[in-house]
Image (cartoon, rainbow, N blue to C red):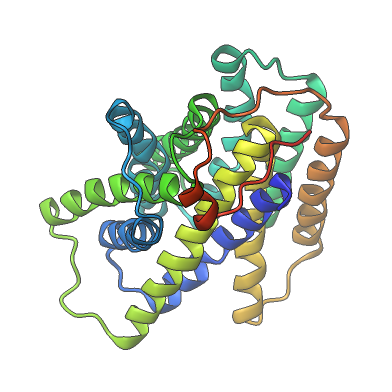
Length: 303
């Protein structure tokens, strides 16, 4: 699959998380994050059946913490302390963090056009999701910024370090690391539901398998094939998708301002792809073995 298409599909899938979480899951955010990560990671590891080399253990802990444990945890803090529109707008700064951090960490100098396209997309997101009269909570703002920074760093190091095994195993190990961290926090803070209904169980399955395992595998495929700076702007599709799903399920008619915001986001993505002609270093990964070929067909890095 084309890496940019994979990244776009991943962020669209993430956009379904809000509607699933708000309508099918209990109100235990840390527990949800733990089940989401472990429920997505364990099936991938069972399918791939791959152990990491010892020299990669500390790296997978770093990546799992950045891309799953810290990311999910801070997102939940921001969601609890901020209105949804404010949290989504702060998250829209993630692509900007990615292209700025890629400068010192990967020697990829961002162009003015690239920065402008990302900021344009963030403005579009704010038009879609922000409401008047919102109150700002500093802890929530810092948590939202931390989540955006965490996933930006995680994406950069995924590309910089490459991977030592198949993409499915690589994704699974990161999710399991983050899931274990969140499970410990859920026990410490006693954020565990007293009961789980059939609807809850169905929601957990959808969240873990499709919106986490599949989505993260597609996201890492995009990073590996196109580079973090090239795919980061697609993150803007997540809040837009969440808004469209919310409007559809709740019979809400979007305003002209919100429709304009959606068009601005899509226009910024198109503009960013047209002006982004900078090459990147392909991510390094292990020599493909027969077992890996059975587990997945890995496309070559493109562009």
